[in-house]
Image (cartoon, rainbow, N blue to C red):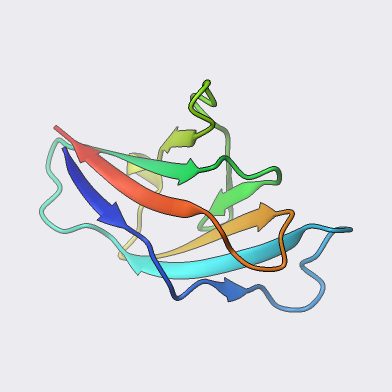
Amino acid sequence: MHIIRLRSAWEPAVAGAMNGSQRCFERWFGRPTNLVSERVSLVIAPAPVGRVHLNEESLHSISNDESGEFRADVTSLLHNRNLLSIECDSAAFQHEVRLEIVE
């Protein structure tokens, strides 16, 4: 397994993207190179309370188990440039976000 951590560069979404106490944070990232038959999962820890979107597609968690992680297969949703949006109940972004690439 290869892991790509999506650290820093998280920006609050444009005004109007807030719902009550929830804030939306966004980050652009490139498609991992040399993907052939590998699967790519998006993992967020701890799992956000709000919604998660990749390239404007709503993601549903495959597993939100006792580890408290959000995990979704995003292989078919990846473009050359990708916008990930995460809603959470925090004024600052405090989640670990990573891509896990598995053959």
